Image 1 (cartoon, one colour):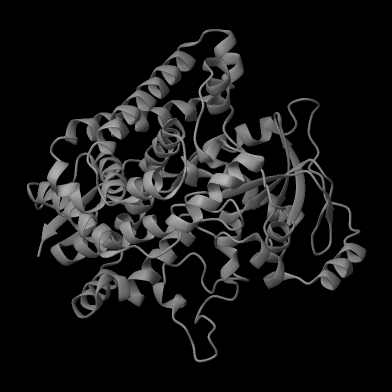
Image 2: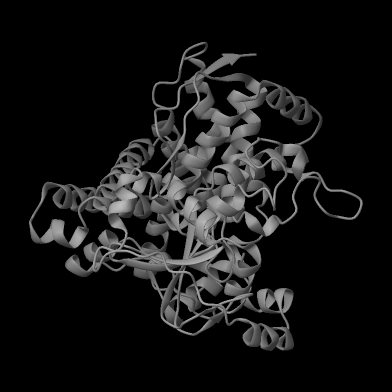
Length: 477
């Protein structure tokens, strides 16, 4: 959940790294160009144009074409959403540098409506202002440091359990790939929470993990349907899609709460222990925070891992090179593995758009964005722009090789891809997610040859998903 709009941390670093006070003054005097406006109808704006272009599932392509027409900055009203869209990495740096101490991001209407309707108190992702800043600072100290050996060993148990199941499908297409990866993501999160005792209790919580994985997948499947009929209208009319959504969220929160209660009794040495013993946080708040962490882990790493396996299955030579590299280097030290993952996340960004709501005027290179505007960063467009990446539509992990001048071989502007976002509201689980995905790819590649049966295209269901079922066949080496 969090990484759907997630984004490194350190606002002060951002400010000093990307601009000085004098530079900002210069930008303020320069930023006088009018922002191009895409003309639309009253109330609905250009909603009919996006529907004709394929609807919300093709929004990334629609906005990409708008940038071709209007440039790197334009304003367009899509139904109720009136936003300023930007695709220049320099403008993105300026936006993050001016986002302030308590930046606001955008949440799906259905999730907020559910919380308001049922008085549901949620975790870090739903917080704003001083409350968010308090708990974000606590979790920065825990989550953004390197993982210790206990976590890695627990992770290896998780991935080996899945690969042993996949071994039964040797030579066959995996029938439930994304469901398996949902379960894997939640199991990784559980292992991170309890640490070294995971192996002792994994069988006791197996059913809980399976139920939660199914519930979380259902939440996101239901959320997507509100792109057709808004959540508030669905609720007012008592439509089935709202009732299905409520049931799915109820089940996921109940399942997550039950799971967290069990995990607390295990007395592990993982993240849960750090939160309970190091910081003075009430137990009910601990449960709120952890429940949302577990729910957030479901779809984010699941879909990124699926895109990684899919892409490797299309490029046999790259797959062989990666296998050879991993035979010589530990997965944590393997530069080629990191390059592969960077390239996957560039081409298939989980969040093709990053959004911010600014209470103050924002000064870009040539434009000024008025206060109280919704600003959307077009990461799909910037990540596939030939100005920033050589041969942008080609999968080339070697583009991320460092040259002697410390620049990349085929990357002219690395800030044009932000898989974990940036700024104060960056993805809190980025270290954990990166290690999990690297380990999954490493262990899978060492054991199997991956074959993708047919290519798919990108679609949007809140995040970047395949427009068709991904069929992957594994052949034991």
